[in-house]
Length: 144
Ligand SMILES: [Zn+2]
Image (cartoon, rainbow, N blue to C red; front, side):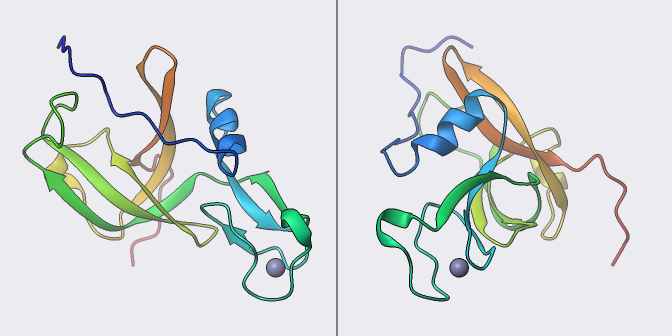
């Protein structure tokens, strides 16, 4: 589908730039406290203890890219003509703990379920724009 409406782009500031630099290399990073190993998304100071100035105790580290659907909406009308409906916007509860907002792709919207295991996939949505999206996990999971 061709469209003249520009696609909304991620809002990238200096705090979050290392995340998007990693996405360009198809790697999924989260911020991790070097003092207590807690994971964060988005960039944050650790909430469990005093922090070093300028986030000195926080570092971007490779994360699993795995999680579960915590909540989702099926958008039957596109938020912008640049998107093609229907699509799924979901809050993914990452294996490391943080919540991450993204799309679930690779299955029909009606097949998305709360608690469904998902994994990150790096989608080339347009030139110079790779987005971390999630698809049903290829790993065989135990049934609850
Ligand atoms: Zn910490």
